[in-house]
Length: 535
Image (tube, rainbow, N blue to C red; front, side, top):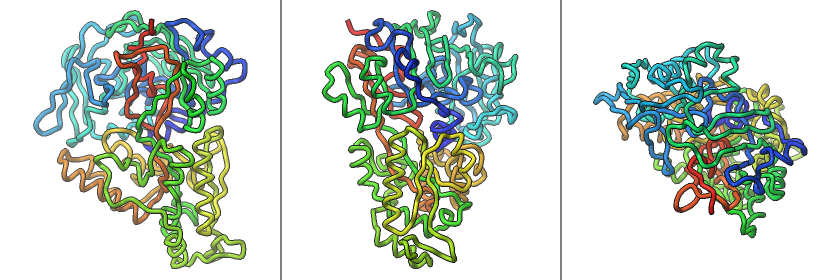
């Protein structure tokens, strides 16, 4: 649950989206969809961003369509050059990264891209006056400077192993964004970039429309018009896909299976770091108790959730790091053990009351659990979690709400949240668990406070030594067994159903290993600029 991931579920990166009205849904792409022009595509996504400015967090993880970073991720999540001509040259001490920039690149308004735009972007993100919840991700950056028009040098405070991965950050034009208020200026909704697409319209809560950039340095895309229809409700998204209003959509497993026999469509399953977790706020008398946290951690039946809710499209989660990641600490898996959970509660003084709900010192083991309205996966996870907890004597009252309702309650109320970012373990764990980030927007939503974890998180990000980093993140994961702070439930595969009428490569469409955020930057349309209509 990083600023990227939680705000991806919530307000900062992907939140506040409204379901399309019937009229808007009927023609989300202005007449495109499966029956539309061959060079147009309309896809259904669940959320929209608050802003389209890289300075406020948009495009920081790549695939923004409107912008480019110095580097980008390929299909195998390997770094490749984008606005840079090559991967950076790194000094022996790991403190200096030098990038040579691509020449001849222009922003969509015709102005040239130069090193000063890179310097402007990074310095603005680091400016405390900029409302960018992801600033902490660049904590290692001491300075960035231009060397002429075609070279940029980054200087770090300490060796930060995954710094190059941070340079997929989308680059903003100084000559536009630098002349207006960074937080409220028109650039936040009418951006200008160097990317393969130009934004042509944004109807909040409804759709974002794009057209191919004829001057794109990588070549004008074959898909000339691209529309992202914002459809919050899973059922509505599936209905619109079936009706032909959409060319593709992300769907939960139960709805994606309904298209299995449709020969005109294909389903793509993307492996992810996307997890579902329950925040256990420190500032609540029940969820803040370590015994309750430990009991819930083993009372929950993760395997059943994978089988019944995800229909096998995922795996149990014991922390932000997936079990198949090389960074996962073996031995930290928690088996379903209801008797063990009951024993923990008994020994901690939580005794069953007359209605079966445990009580200690006059406090009932009861708390609310919020989940996002219209999100069937969150609802199903919340209800299953509440059912498992009830067997241990803990009452959980699951209830739906918008993020506007949920966010003010996060300090004391549990939330069925999501997060996950591929790559380096620092990306997820630091923003999720660092005590100093508690209450900072959607960072550390549980207000988790563990000094051993704090030290390990700092150790893990301040060295390039693989052994030292592994030891640090092993410490973090083992501490989460002792005092969870969150109950991690599942890691979820993303399922996309798409009309079978495009090729992006000789082998067809593809997906990357995906973060929690899904929609604008992920899915088979992660490289829509390379799609070509089938003959």
